[in-house]
Image (cartoon, rainbow, N blue to C red; front, side):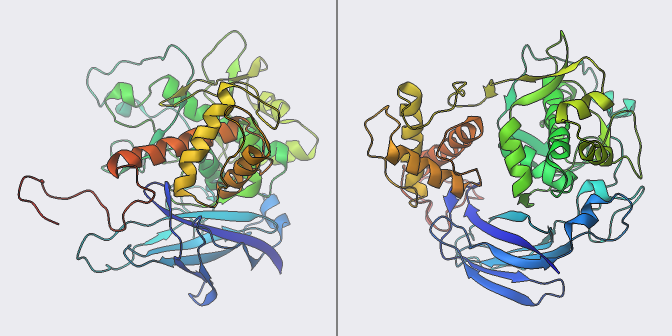
Length: 446
């Protein structure tokens, strides 16, 4: 048997607070415990090895079986509701990082029955009209503009276009079809892209194929935001996770290291036509059980094997005049990326900014070492703090603040400082602290 890897990150408060001492069991397909782990001060377990199937199976479009082994994870911590995640795909040579967000128990409440969350296989594996065994229940179809009945169901809706291409950070994802009562979740855009790519395609594909698909995924989401496709129709979200309308997103699903690295390298870039600013509508389908006029996901593998670059793959499926552009404009961002990477020897206000970010984030993630360099000077202690931050949040730990690290720093800083407003800037969110479900007034207790 081949070997793959799994690491679990246990946190609360939308990832802003790590949970040390959480008990984690890794289970096989029959529910037998294979590992019993405990999270460290950053809320992380050690990386463990698991048996799986050879990566060649997930690179063959004609293979009809399940090209991976799946496992389950159960997490418990006193004062929190337990979590149970099943059908986590493990691929040969790939590390799956599984984020587990625990919800605090309400005061006096006892632990309730655990609701199992199934991950399942990526959308590219869905056969037409149904789902792969152990996979998502969503149907796989070509990503197209929603039918006219959805375009007109909100009376008076008119298409709108933003003045510029922006990264929606966070992006609001509706966990269902557009007109369903499903929940909305607000997700950092970087995390959204990594999760969506991990939920759409196999992480074992060649790098050029991964990047071509990530460009399509990222551009598709930016197009939805740029055109205000859903918000102009009265909806309170930017995109759905239903593949009949948009692209797969599994809330709480794993992210694979090859996909994470590829996203970090091209984050903020998108596909457009020459002479236009708008993100191109990068429709796509799996190219086997469903064919379309857009990108074929399986076709990108064949082209990558023939030596095509990501840009060449995109031009193979989309118009010849498409090109790659970049946007550094971020909505709801505390500070925009300066445009060049920062490392040892850098000086100035941008360095001071990341030192401030890291100093505040360290209060929630104490494994990050203190910075002793002069303010505004990127020295060895700043590099060490950056490296620990990067390893904690699944970025390449090179000690250099490129755009992926900058945006992650900004997002985590925003999360922990918003928590501070609610918690008097304490070092830790109080265990069991949850929004009340009743009105509080003078005389209320508890």
